[in-house]
Image (cartoon, rainbow, N blue to C red; front, top):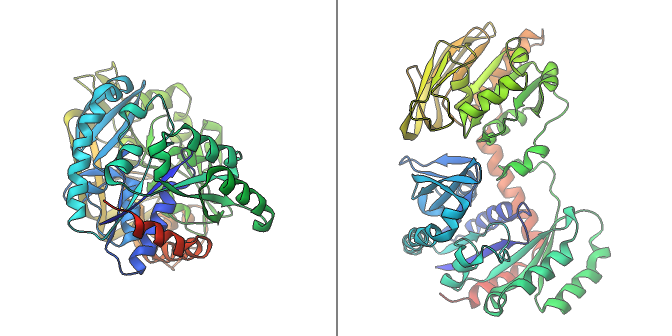
Length: 478
C-alpha cells in the first residue's frame, strides 16, 4: 500500500477537502483508495453500518473514495464536552471523558496502538491511503504525545504535502515557519507545498513561488483556487460562519448552541434554492425565521439552560420548530440525569412542546436506522418511506423515531434531511404557511454530491502538479 499524507500549517486550511479530492482522483485512476485520520477532534460524527462512531469528515472522504465508511478510517475520535475535556472514542466506542492534560499525558500513546492495528487492516485491502493530519505538525508543546501528525508519517515513512491557506493571510510565513519548527527527519518527509484558497491572478504570485522553493528547498506542487459553492461537508465549527444560504423564500434558523454538534445535518436544507438558512447566535435573529431548528448538542442539559437564560424560549414558542437529537430532547417535558452526567442538575424542565421525557443513561446508542415518516406538520401531511440516517445519543426517550405535534416535530435521526422527498415535503409545508405554492421538483442530493466530488477532483487535478505528485508517491517506501 502506498501512502500520501496531507498536513497543514493550521486548522481549517483545507486538509479535509484536499484529502477528499485526492481520494476521488485516485479512485478515478482505478486505485483502491481509502482516507485515514488517526485522531479526529470534532463534534460532527457519523455512525458506520456496524454501529461504530467516526468523524463526519472521514465519512465524507470515504464517499469521495467510493468506499463504505468504516472505523479503521478514524480509529480515535475526540468529542469536546467543554471545560477542556473530551469524550474519547477508540475503535468507534467511548472509553471515557478525559481532560486535555489526562489525554496528552499518556493515554494518547496507548491509543496509538489502535492506530497501528487500523493501518495494518487497511494495508491488506487498499492500494492507496490518503492520510489527513490535524492542526499543525509544529505544535512543539504537544508533539511528544501527538498521534495524528508526524508520528503517523514516520511510522509509515509517508511523504507529506504541507498546505497553507492564503485567504487568511500569512501563508508564506506559515509554510516557512512550520518547516523551521520541524525536526530534521520530519522536514525530510515533507516533499511538497500547496497554496490553497487562492483568489486573483496566479501570475502575480509566481515570485512568491520562487521564493518559497528557494527558501525551503521544497517544490510548490500547486496553487489551488478558492472554490465557491463546493457542496461538500466541512469539518469543524470554524466554518459555521460561512454556512449560510441567501435569497430563498423560506427562512430557516438553526440555533447556534454553545455545544452544537452534527451541524452538517442542515447542509442539505441550505442547498435548496428556495431556502435561506442561517445560524442564529441571539434570539433577535429568530424574528425573521419561518422555521426554527434546535440542533444536536454535546451537552443537552447545559444548552437547554443556556436557551432559557438567553431568552430564546419566547421566540421558539411562537414558531414552527424542529428538534434533532439533543434538540429533540429539549422539546420534551422533562430531562432526567440521575447520575449528573451532563450537569449538576438531576432534573430539568424541557420546553414542553412534545409529550416526551428523556433519561440520560450510561449507554451510548450509535446505530444506522431506517424509518417511515407519517405525521402532520404545519397543517401538511408528511409521508415518506424508508428514510435513512443514524442515531448518536445517550438519553433514553420512550417515543417513536419521529414525534410530532402541530407545528413541532423532533427526532433522534441525524441525516434525516438528506432524504430528498422528506426534505422537500418539510420545506413545502413551511411554504404553504407563507401562502407560497409548493415546489414539485425534488433534488437528488446524493447525485449532486457525486458531481461535486468530480468537480473538486477536476479543479485539483488541473491546478496540482500531478506528475510530480505521482513521482513523490512512487518513490516513497513503507
